[in-house]
Length: 183
Image 1 (cartoon, rainbow, N blue to C red):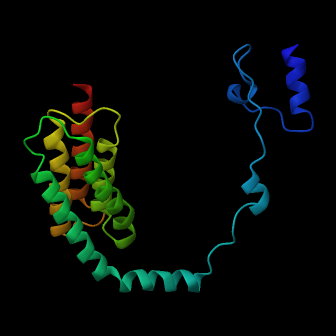
Image 2 (cartoon, helix red, strand yellow; image 1 turned 90 degrees about the vertical axis):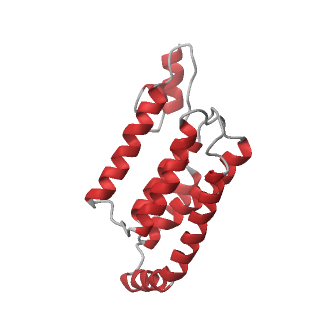
Image 3 (cartoon, one colour; image 1 turned 30 degrees about the vertical axis):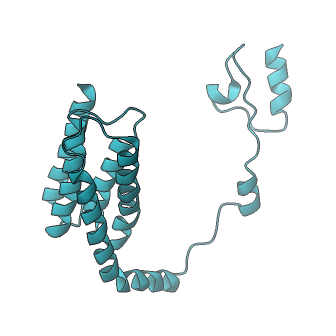
């Protein structure tokens, strides 16, 4: 009966592609609807003309010094926030939000402005802060270590993620996080 019903639903459409679309017998029935945006836009916009892309790159490059000043301010603010939490056993929601807000902004802007390593570390920091549980115990100084690594990477001008030092920093954070989360 359910199989007959499914055939009626899929009549005139491609067959379901997997167990998620087919639904599990007795559990649920998933009926995918057409994606309205895809219907309106087709395969998406045409590619940006090369000349416009070059103009945008030049605009970003012309603003790079201003961004580096902003990045310095954001890193100073992160350091100020971290100084206030180093001896805490647990991060409060407000402290977590303050750190996350700045780190999120850095991760979004840094890569576009040639600060790839700072952006990657900011992303790792955001992943640590974006947890349903409170940050506590040894995780608190680990948060501070992310900030210091961003400051050091920026000061040493470690910008390319293929740089050996960058790989050591990034891999070290990933390994340390895995160890902290498994403990």
